[in-house]
Amino acid sequence: MPIHLDAVTSRLEQAAFGKIAHDVMRCAFDIHNEFGRFFDEKIYKRELARRIPQTVIEVPMQLTFETFSKLYYLDVLVAGSAVFEFKTVEALVERHRSQLLHYLMMAELPHGKLINMRTEQVQHEFVNTQLTRIDRTAFTVTLQAWQELSKPPIRAWFEAFLREVGTGLDNALYEEALTHLLGGEERVVQEIEVTSENVSLGAQKFRLAAPQVALKVTALSNPTPFEIHARRLLKHTGLEAIQWINLTRNEVSFRTIQAGV
Image (cartoon, rainbow, N blue to C red; front, top):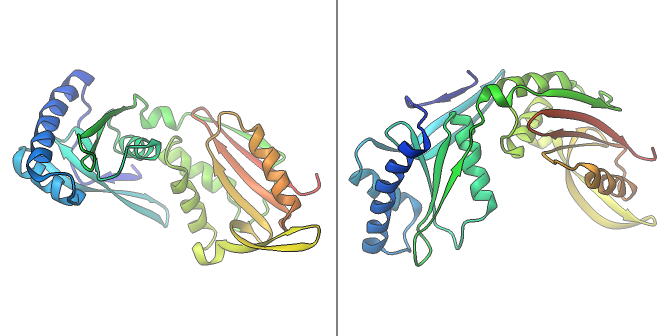
């Protein structure tokens, strides 16, 4: 397994998870009433762990593939099966849900819950997935005018990476893995000049697969608008092409978008 979780875990049915979540939320409400809403996440997590048996916090979760490695931490793990992600934010938003979903899929656990302690009343949401690693590695590969423009070539390596970790995870992870393959952040992230009718408008940072070749990973169910805007981008930079990888649950497409084509 490319993902190692520093805990023994088991998958729960939703009803069993709900029972644990009920106890955790009752405790979270009590802590919120006693401590208020202005402490850091770590204070609330530590107090929860003090009150609820079989609770561990900040559980390391290591992803490794060849020479690439990425370390994550599960906020709270109860009874080796129930994940809770604590926040101290103005409101829960989509990126918080996506983050917890990412953690659940990496840990191969189906149910989790977000708990926001910063609001006047505790804000909480369930996050669920029935997708397993087997589901997420069963995808087809499509090549659409793809050209290997980088050294080392990225298509075979990235497909092998996905066959290990699966689709559906945070796009930032995929781009970070490719950045590692291509030589690291300092080499890959470069400033590219933006122009309008030969007038410079300044420079913007892009992730490059090769000199003058941008790299982008997306997870779009409707990729057409991306290509339209990508071609507009090429018209206003010196970029010659974009290496575009789009991930959906069942398909991974590799496409080279070339300037002037």
